[in-house]
Length: 262
Image 1 (cartoon, rainbow, N blue to C red):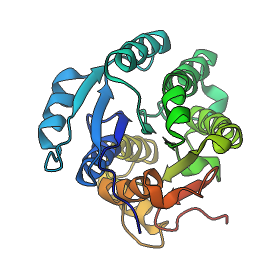
Image 2 (cartoon, rainbow, N blue to C red):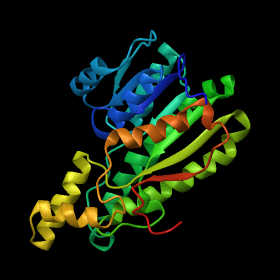
Image 3 (cartoon, rainbow, N blue to C red):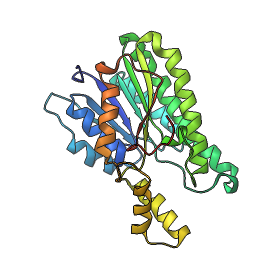
């Protein structure tokens, strides 16, 4: 099975921590040169120092605030003009604040749409030309299992994640003839700062300890534990590889079996 990424370039968003960091480390271990992309320069430099360079990889750092799509557009267009195109794009951004949909301010939906879909779209548009030229491209969107089964207490996130999933499926149909795959990987409960915040919010609302809230969450997962970011990264890395060339337009849960639907 060909999962060698030597000679490939990958843009990994939200890579200063959590799932994004794990994806960057995994792709580098498979031989890819990584451009880390988020708003925190210092954190990205720290991650860059961790990345494998044994195959001659050259790693870079790019910064922008994903809540400002035009800033993202300017940054990526300039970077591509200076350094060339990419073979792999990992779209990954921290999710909206938790809370029910019916009490959310309308601006929260607009902000989330810009943060996720519009910024993702700017990146795709910047990277597609080089992918078409090579007849090779892997676009992988880190979304949520809520695109299959909406999650309680995540009203804004459920709404926007669904929009991103539909956008991605549409792109998969449009870009398939050019050898470009577009897939969504859906993390379940993964041991990240995002999960910590969700559990703390539930503990506060239910009047229980954070430890008890965490155990309640684990009880809903057949594996009875939270995922490690590295486990998610392994699935994303496979989809980024040549071996996954005939897989496109899918939503792949990495959730320990929690999602109730097929």
